Image (cartoon, rainbow, N blue to C red; front, side, top):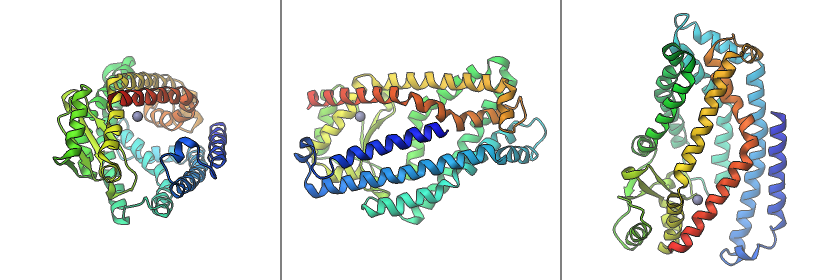
Length: 356
Ligand SMILES: [Zn+2]
């Protein structure tokens, strides 16, 4: 834990040093497209974000350490288990969710500060306190509505399928993820945002002609009201096959010329046409399988639960612990993932250049 924290702090400090090196004179590639004032503000924002992120990193590590070694989680486990019969699965599923909620509580003021102080200072915050609180409550309700049944089935798999439960668990969660790729933009996104079709006109014609030219069959282009919460902008496509849809942030539509927007979309289509989507899905499936194998192995090892004060042979705490500690292991693989992501971004850029 300390090692990962140290590595992250050093990396963030190196990053800031690099930003400061160019703080007075922008690199030539940047000065061609950005005026001096905008550049100075972007440097100040990057530095402020990084310093804030460092504080968050230290805070989160302290909260995780406290949660793991104070005995509060085993106490919660005992408490929640007493609400049902001795072997009940639903109390165990509920424990995982409640532990997750409990651990996210200390971050709430931090997130508030980031949105209403840091982002506000640089003019990016467009959210209100009321909207922010509503978002938190909706998110919490969704977590329970989706998480409780899913965890209940996962924890029941041991009873239903025996020693191979983790293979079934992997198949279940993987299927769930694929279904969510289609359902998420239809059922979840509308709970938080409004999507409207891009109106007829030059922009729409341009983008549809690009989609045609590049063999990206898109039925609709939609605009999402991202400006409700933030001045930041984005564009993405979701789903696959005939469920595919292109989504543009209204902030992006407001900030860019039609030609610039076409370039952004060409980059996104590049990800699709270069086959990045199935490869990323395959990669995340591999990692998910590894995760389930780890939970199955650790749940069978009495020392693992015991080390954190939980009774041996209980699957739910093993799940929670792997969830909390998994990032400590996967962090060291992030150079490989980042290198891959960098390569994909370059490929998508090259595709966009050819398509324009
Ligand atoms: Zn990209």
